[in-house]
Length: 247
Length: 345
Picture 1 (cartoon, each protein chain N blue to C red):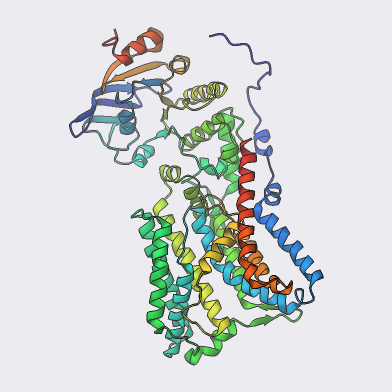
Picture 2: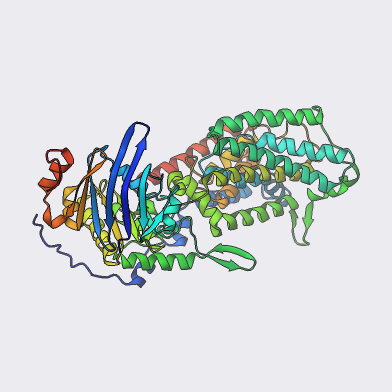
């Protein structure tokens, strides 16, 4: 059964049809690249999936169950997590504090509920280990490399046993060496059976990790095919419109 | 794409113990390298030098005065630390302190009990903090302007309530009120009660800031407000709460000051907000938000009071006081910038 399914989903902002009748389904443990030029509708699609607003028409299903998201927290409750492009991390807090931000572990100290820092450091250490990242739980974010920051943002999604992780341009602002680190993180998520939706502009990243590619142009889906059946040239053609529709 | 093999054999897996034990700096190193600690050292050194250089500084009477006077800045500086960590500022604290003093004094003067006086002072402060916070957090007004306006309004209210006269009679509970400002004799040492109150508030605030989710949220709001919102931190409620916290400390400070001075005039607390902000900044708080400690607020207040106290003892005219304080603020900012530049390299 598909973990996430969109059926004839449209989103209109007044006269602007940002997304038009898009249908696709995602399987567990699949990495799907979501490609498209600026204004093609991929951000709107991402926002629909992550619950920023409901679709104008159409239906979204999680594990076969029809869902209606109005706020991001609705989507999160259903196991859909988003890793924002700016990562949404607090520079002045430690890696562990960021992983648990908004859902801290607590313990009783006499009559008081206090932070269970030891448990949070241990748990985030385990998550970083699972991701095979050398991020240290006690380090401040401002001391970290781009790749380590990504690991923190991704570890956050793993706290809640996410089914789908939406990654918005995870490799846009980091060095070449760190790109490899981030792509490895994506593979780890996939190996854990988590579905990853990868929004990216970088063709090499797409072909390095994705199993499937969905291309958007002017609000409609123009391609949805296995990465092995496609090529960077074809995807580029689909994005620009040089190729009208995937064969 | 062909790449050469990574010359360093990369371990497939890292041991959990490696990750947990390795850290760039230990807790102790962080404390020792902090601005608050440096100021604390400066405070101790200056205190020792002043004791040696003058006859009057190291006397127990003078030290008693310094610690007590420092509390009048320190109590509000503790509250201000919360506000400044979130990236805000509160200019109304001096006026709010005066208003709470006037409310408490007037109510007691009319013959009501001390409890009612205290409750009124605290209620007035919380209401003002709430109004400040709502305007800033929910309507998006800039903290500087909102609290500047409140500074004028609160002072004017104080003048209205007291009819712009000095109140120095506090009805039937006058003796209880004045007792709070007196020293507590512990036999071997006499401690001003205001100092004890400050220490209790400082411990409480330090606990909240470091040990609770609320404290983490305050830090998160100042560190990256967008991130805090995205992760479900109730950003607006947190912002409202910090303005209520600082107003509450202004009320407590007002009560302590009233009991010590035994009178309130509508000039009280003028320009106090600047001293309070200076104390927090000297102690390492960052006006851009995201950084600040209770310990820093305390040592900052201590340093300000020590300067004020020692200049006359050294034969330097009090007119120079502002120059010294201003220079120290500039030093504090410079320290912050140098640290940031080093971190970048």
